[in-house]
Amino acid sequence: MNTRGLLPRARGVAAMATLVVGSTALPAAGSSHIVDVVWSEAGRFEHSAMVPAGRFIELCGKLAAGDRIRWAFDAAVPMDFNIHYHVGKETVFPAKQSQVVIGGELLQVGVTEHHCWMWTNRSSNAALLRVMLQR
Image (cartoon, rainbow, N blue to C red):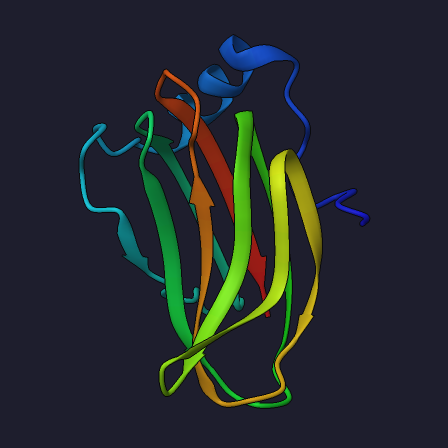
């Protein structure tokens, strides 16, 4: 899992918060937990959010078979993470990790469907999450 060059790793929660607040407005805790992926002209999507304690956030968008999406994230506390999509009533997980603070890989899309990147904050405090997706 190589995330070098995708998201600079901040040292400590305060440093992460300073980096994100300085460049991106953070949604308030308790705001929408499902975010539509909207690609920039350069094929990039970035999102930062405070994930409330005991809650989750999903970043979802339609991808086509054959798409290749490089993704990276870092979180202020360990979170459960997955990438998933639905086929009928079945949920398929191309990636799934428990209690991680950093991650990144290349998703090679095998089926045209809405895919969601999802994080669950099982800690007792709201925590900062930063995500980058690149086509």
